[in-house]
Amino acid sequence: MSAPGRLPRKAYDQELLRLQEELVKMAEWVKDAGARVVVIFEGRDAAGKGGTIKRITEFLNPRIARIVALPVPTEREKTQWYFQRYIEQLPAAGEIVLFDRSWYNRAGIETVLGFCTPEEHRRFLQQCPIFERLLVSDGIHLIKYWFSVSDEEQARRFESRIDDPMRRWKLSATDLYSRTHWVDYSRAKDEMFVHTDITEAPWFVVPADDKRRARINCMAHLLSEIPYHAPKLEKIGLPKRQADEGYVRPARDIYTYVPDHAASMVEPAGH
Image 1: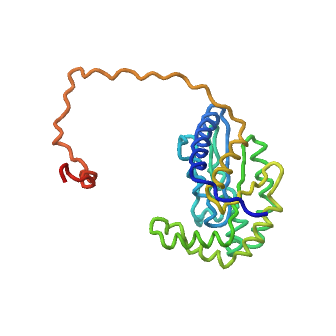
Image 2: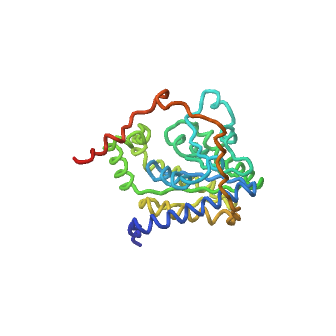
Image 3: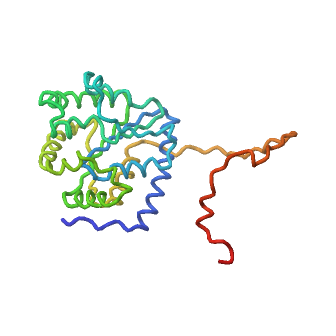
C-alpha cells in the first residue's frame, strides 16, 4: 500500500485553523470542568513532535496548557524514584500538560545509549503500566502519541537542519549519534510497546513523513479523545475609559524610546 500524497497547503491551513479553534474550546472546557489532561509525545528525533505541539498550543491560554520538556536529571534527581520528577509536572484541576518527551526516555534513549542499567530498564517496563493505570484511575486523561518517521525522511530533516542556522540548535550530538543506533531504537520501541500499550492508556501511532498530515491527524484525534463541549460565551461589553480628571501626561521627550528600526525599511516619499 503506497503512502498518501502530501496534504496540500490550502487544505492544511484551513483545517489547521478550524482545529485550533476547537482546541481553544476544548481547553476552556478543561478549565471549567476541572479536568486534568496529560498528552505524551514520543518518537524518533526529527519526527515532528515539536512542530505539532507548537500548533496545538499556539492559541491556547498558557495558564491552562503548558509544555514540559525536562532537561537531563540532576545528581539529586538521579537518586529519586524514576517517576518522581515527572509527577511534579502533572496537571492540577483545569490544566493540560503536554510532555515533549516524557518518562519514556528510560525505554528509549537511556537504554539504547546505556544511560540506565538493564535492571533499571526492566524495572521501568514493569512499573510504567502500573503508574499509568494509577493516573487514569484517578481521573487523568492520558493520551500517548508515537510519531513514526522513515529513515530517509529523518536523514533529509537532519540535513536541512545542518544547513539552516535558524534551526541548527535542534540538532544535538545525541541526535546525530542516534542515527548509528537506528535498529537498536527500533528494538527498544517494539519492546516498550509490548509492555506499555495497555488498554487504559494505549499508544497511538502518528505516521509523520508528511508533517502537515501528521499535525492535522494528531490534533483531530486529540480532540476526539477529550469529551468536551463548546462553552457558552458570555456577552462582553467594552467599558468606557476613565475620564482624565485633570491628569496631564508628562512630556514625551523625558522617556527613552527604542530606535525606529522599521523606518529604515521604508523608502522616503518621492524616492
